[in-house]
Image (cartoon, rainbow, N blue to C red):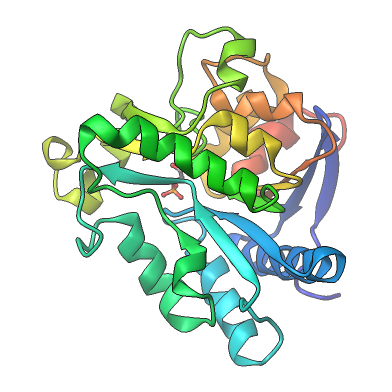
Length: 274
Ligand code: PGA
């Protein structure tokens, strides 16, 4: 059996949920799905547009994409990328910036044109942050929209840095790219990278919920027991802005969740579909 075959496939809340034996296997599958999406978009319209994520979860996905590139199986020459988020303010050369992360894990290793790799700019003056964010959304639209958006999920259910809120579902679905304060759980979870919770940059630019939901396909990765509860809330709970990932239920047929057994535990446990 090829390594990328999931142990279990469920359909929940209009999403395909694929559970793998472990996170490395799920990451191989994710890279395979991204490579297929690139090839399909190139065949259909001569270019591909990817929405990319940072954080610990997708690191092995980028390693596999780089390996595919080195094997000659994947070219980024006609690909454009848009990253989900960036701390604000931050210098691109700061090792903690998501621009640095992308350079380190993907951009420096592949044939992606530098001017096709878009990361929100943590150096834009604050008075222009709203215009910069609006321009980011216009660029995505001008590029024909995202063919595939790669997502992680925060322990508080955030997607990108779209944090939990008391907005109505309709208003939350319309959120554009913008400057946001980080949620306390996000700051706690970033404390290790920053060397303490008080050192975490407390704001960020994030791609909005609207452009994420508008992607033609969405791949969500979640691994480990720390994500089990929020994965179950996002897939089995009500659609609510308090759990931003639950808003993915409003775009049925577009979303694939790739989980390891630990992240799926609560889901599968509660389910009759084991
Ligand atoms: P992580 O972050 O991959 O570092 O767990 C996921 C997220 O917050 O979206």
